[in-house]
Image (tube, rainbow over all chains, first blue to last red; front, side):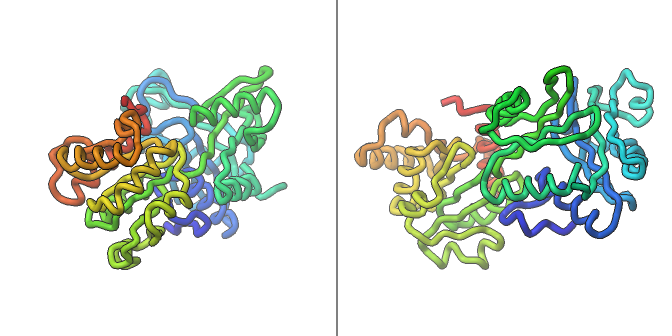
Length: 121
Length: 226
């Protein structure tokens, strides 16, 4: 992973802004990009509110929104959202059958905002 | 999200400014809020900034997600010793911008500390320049009173959220005596975490660095019990 030069002294790995900068550089390279962020959690959840995952149209990922349990489902939605352009709020939890199948094993519920990255003014 | 928003976030980071990104969940429209503004949304943003917490809020019937972008945490390490060589990269991975203070250029060298900002002034002027704030941890490791004492004196006058010093209980008792004679109050001396680090029976320099990072993290997240 290339770490953005605008953020001296910081390792990129856990920094939300560094993740957004990576997303921006993908867009500049001509790829389509979506940004997913955890907006709410109930019960136990592996990543806190505000955690960021960026995805491009080749399914490259940087950052995370869970310990890995819902990332694949989020990436599938993200691929659709970066094409259609409308943001969407996804909900995963043990009461939700889809979440059960993607395996939110920790027993919590999370809401994730997924939106396209655009360079429109 | 717009790329122009990311550019603004980067500018705020470069200027060490705190900002809140507000995103309306219904349609993804976004606003960048700074502490000074006046609106119901800006009030909510101020609360988020103060508690350094991201979260969803409802303002005038609309649901917004507020994400706080604070300047990075800082760690000032005093003394370019072996433990510091392990601590600096660990601190960076944990999210701290690290500055090493040591007037001895042979200790605080770029070879020994790749990627770490080096400050070769004596701790007095160095600390005045670095101005530790409530998002700063100060860790004194030099084991040399000429270097550690003035750094600790400055740290205890600042609002640094963590102040720690390497040394045994006996070393620390001697240090407290010297600092008290220099006019530091008992109340302030109580703020020093010493012996430094959580007690995990650490032995090697890397293990001691782990114990320091753990204690700094606990103090940041749980608050200082002292």
